[in-house]
Length: 100
Image 1 (tube, one colour):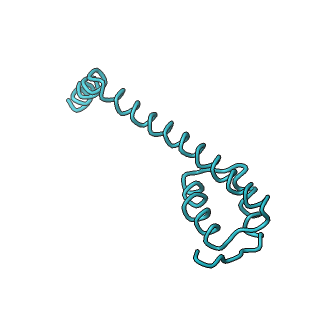
Image 2 (spheres, rainbow, N blue to C red; image 1 turned 90 degrees about the horizontal axis):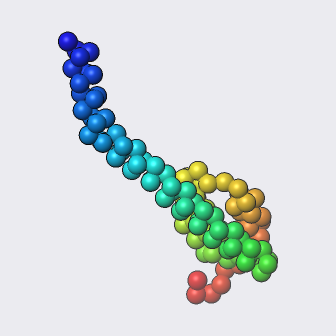
Image 3 (cartoon, rainbow, N blue to C red; image 1 turned 135 degrees about the horizontal axis):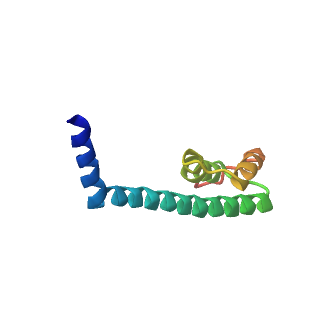
């Protein structure tokens, strides 16, 4: 009796499209996360390049880059060129600018 009830329940769920709906929502969220990671990576690389060309970064600029972009990027599973550039950025002489 329990197997029959389970079979009927699974058939109803599958035929009603709930499974497809849930699958599409999960898949959509995954694509959104991948897109967000790509955009953040581009920003991190650009900002790192700006500071490497300039040869310094202020403490505030570094904190903003690390806390608002790199750390969340890493927490979401990001990797790549940003991982190579951030240690280089952290080695730059930090300079505090008055008023910042």
